[in-house]
Amino acid sequence: MPRDRRLLLIYAIILLDVIVGSAIGPILPDFVKGLPYPQLWLSLGTALFLGIQLFSAPLLGKLSDGYGRRPILIVSAVGTFLADCLLLPVRAGFYLANRLSDGLTNGMYAAVRSAITDISPKDQLFKNLGIEGAIVSLGFVIGPAVGGLLLTALAVPAGQQARYIALLAVSLSALNVGLSLLLRETHDQRTGVSRDVLRSELRNSLNVTRLWHRLLDKDQQHPGLRQLVLMQLALTLSTGYYFYFVAFVSLGEMRMDARAISYFFMYFGFLSIVINFVFYTYFADRINQRRAIFWLALLGTPMLAGYGLVGTSVLGLYVLVTIDCLTLSLIQGLIEGLLAQKTTDEDRGEIFGINQALQGVASFATTLVFGVLSLADLRLPFGWFAVCLAGVALLARKKIEN
Image (cartoon, rainbow, N blue to C red; front, top):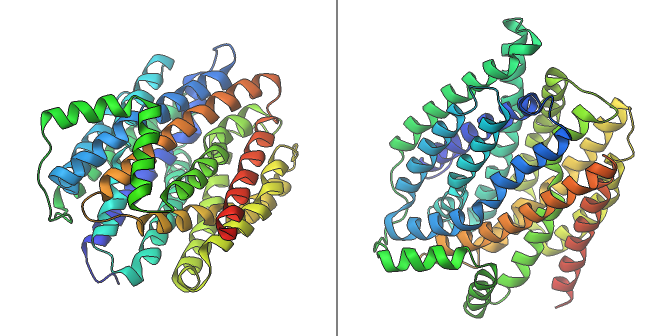
């Protein structure tokens, strides 16, 4: 049981948010059916969702430093609810509008990680951020599971599945608004943010070069921060496959329907929960985290390439995802824990915001790359993802040597 019960509420908010996002994942192909190059439209939606965080994440992070984490989480929960309402008409235009509007408030994770760091004792930081990763994995289990059970129990015909899941998402996101209202503030040093500072923050956030220079400035205050962010950016380029997977298994050789995709993500998420929980509870604080990142990335690289070679083998897909949970899926929490150690109460939200914005740039870039590659061959993007994960191993290796 966490020492601070606010952690439980934060975890619940994260869980519901991920459940909503993962529940709608299997139905997204329904929104672009009939369009030419549907995989490209799915990629465009992902690019909008992730790319808009370029400015929303630093802005929300800065606001959370000035006004507290709680108001930002409330606004983000309301934004997600309104965005999910846009999915009720199953049309491509509304899908793109949902991706754009939901991306605006998905920058809340800068505030979430700041809130967890605010109330975590130093000896519990890796564990608490690791549990966040396990909670995300749990959401990936529950979301498809609830969606699959709903479609099965009500015997929903294929043509109506998207609308039923959209209604489920709206209901759960409304519940998350209520949970966010219950959260007590975690950040005591609130000084507000002037309009001039907000305007400057917005301008700076839209300027990638300026974002990078802000990171370099922070690296002067917290040596080693830049190297960790570079590792996370390379990881973000590789984990673009999370967003590509639905298009790959539904439009590729496997031709999975929404129910089969739900079952797959249930297995992926459940296994990831167990492995993340054991790893971050019993091992993460006792190992050399940088060396662990190197080996996990190195071992995960051929696994990522293997996804593109699995063909029609469902067994092969499940074997690869098992290896995934033991390697690549463990890296994110380690990097976040190392990053959290480089922050202070005064700039925690700002640093996490800059980091998430740069991740938004990387996510946007990798989405464009895998969208173009998929036009030539649906298997090609996994070669790109594998190269990017090898980059994580290379950066981690340099960090160890330094």
